[in-house]
Each structure stands twice: as structure tokens, then as C-alpha cells.
Image (cartoon, rainbow, N blue to C red):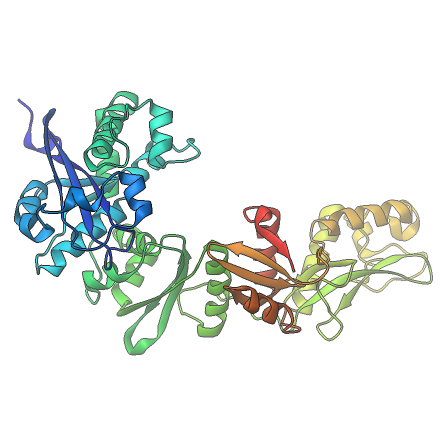
Length: 463
């Protein structure tokens, strides 16, 4: 006999069709539920009168016309029946935030509380099949050879989710599948000062979130492409990670700023941490006193690193810059580390006083190969130095003027590695591009450099 603890969960595979994508403004036109209990499947479906206009593009996509829903029951008419079909079951949907958000909002308008455990099959697919490049429903159909009966109709798509569940059972086994379900639906104990309504209000979209402690003191600033999920992960980790537990106990208030995409969130996080100095973030330093090494050839033909301080520094414009450091001490420590690693002469590098014809201290302790006394040629010494420094070369701005990087629905405007702002239309683009010089920030330089050579390489527009 199967023990109660090992009894498989009751799953409700849910799909809805709607008049649009905004669950506060739009309404449900069809709902389909396939309940799986101990290998038995029970179906429930209904068209619903949304009591609002169905746009033409939605009619073409779903095939649901105003005539089809005219005279059908409203959500209010079927609310108790729908809740009965879902209560006590795991709510399973693809991109569950959409389906769950609509149904939850529909219940809320009637004063009915609805808080099931929710399983998103997008997240389940990512967890079980991490090497699969995409996880939308059309990809799952193709990747797992699912049989399509009625695409973009509620019961047809709910059936696809049931088929995907069966595929998961076959490919990873029931035990691993249930482990994944438990992992993705694990209940999270919220901090004592945070209500569920606060969490529900946070969009699962790109942006930055700010945890505040007592007296509105900033505790922690983070960023994510799915803020609500990331915030909840902090509280999930609070059970096992000491830092997260400390954060969870201290947080009194959460704010968030939604952004158009990941790049904007990264830049915003960097700026907010510098502005608000939250106590539990790694402190990011402002870039006003930056310095860098520049190779200069002296009268004896020796290429010697010369420190360029913030008053002469123009990152993005000057070639032959290496490093970018927050202080002279940090720059000197870096150069000393390079000398030691590559057995360079500290006297020729200017790190110790040189005496003509005499070996440096490093040569005496076998940390210099002898360029100071001619044991190694200056050309070899220079080549080794340049090779080491090139790992930290500051890239000259590779564009002729400002650029815009498409990030979601907005454009991030950058010039000479400096962040100028966010533009949402052509006029804003022009205004920002012509706004003049902005302050160079080392962290933003790193973010932008990585972005234009990687994830956003195809989204760069030169202005």
C-alpha cells in the first residue's frame, strides 16, 4: 500500500484564453482544466462571456468570436464551480504567471481568496531540460513530439501540458519529477514584517528591488530579470544561508523599480548602490578619482608605466591605458603583482630606485630575470610587460559618437562608455545623444563593454 507521504499530488493542468494580456483590464473568454489524480484524468471546460470587446487579433489567434461567447456564463456565474475544480490541487500552467494572474484577479474582484500552489511548466522545463535552448510551448511541442489537437484553445493547450508531464515522467522518472515539483512549489516563510500582498505586487519582470530595514534604512539592493521570483528566493534561502536569514529578519519594507530589460537593471543597480549605500551590499566605489597606467618610453629607451591620474584621465578616448584603479595604492599593488608573476624588473618599472649597472633587489632574490643588468634584452622585457598589461587594456570607444542599445522596449544611450539615459522615442534619443559629457563610471564601463560584445551585440544602433 502506498504511504500517504509518497502519494502523488493532484494536478490541475490549466489554460485560459483572454481578451488581452493585462489581467486587470482584460477578461477571460475560455478556461480548460485537466485534473490528474492517480493516473485518472477529469476534464472541465467552459466558454465565458467576458462582457467586453474581443480584439480582432485575439479572435484570429484563438478562433473565439463575440458570437461564441454571447449568452455564455460569466466568470462570476461559474466562480464557485471553478474554485471547486482547482481547490486542493497544484495549479499547473505554462508561463503560470499569466493564467494564475488572470484567475486570481477574477476571484479577487468577487472578494474570493485564491492561493493555490502554482507550478510553471516553463520553469519545470528549464529545470529538467537545461540544455534545451527555448522553453515556450511551441518549442516543447517540437522537442517532445506532443500531439496538437487545438492550439490556442484552452482545453487543447491544457492537454499539451498533460502530455508534457507524461514526457517528463518517461524521460526523468517519477521520483525526479516529484523532486522538481517540490523544489518549484516549496512554500516560503515570509519575513515577519512582510505581507504576502507586498510580494504579490512585485512584478516578475526585469528591474531592481530595494530591501529597507527599520527607520527606512537601505539594507540590500538587487536586480533580476524576474524580480518577484528573485525576492522570494532570498526568503527561501533564509532557511539555510546565514546572510539571507539576517536579511530576512531585518527587512521591514520592499520597493522595486521595473525596467525594460536586463541591461537597464544592471546599470540601475550599480547607480542605486552608490547612491544609497545599503549596508548588506558589497560597497561599490565612485569613479571620480580613477587612475590608470600608460606606457611611456624614457630617454634610455625603457618603456616605463606612468600613472595617469583622474585630472588627465579620459577613458574611452586615450589609447595605451591599462587597468583603471580607484587609487594610486591599488595601481601600484597591481603593477607589483604583475612584476612578480612575470619576473619583471621592478627598477625598470619604477617601483624601486634604479642604480646604473647594478641589479635590482628582485634579481638578487631570483624574482627578476635580469633586464636591469642586460641578462635579458629590453625588447624581451617590454614584450612580457605589454603581454601582461594587455589583459587589462582599457578599450577605446569603438564608435563614432553615441550609440543606443535596445533593451526590451526602451533604448539605453551610451557615449564613450558613459551612461546618458533611457530613451523611449526618437526625440528622447536625439536629446540624450546631444546632451554632452557624462561622468565615467568604472562599473558601468564593465557592464556596457560586456553587453556590446555579448548579449546585446545585435541590438546596438549607432546614432
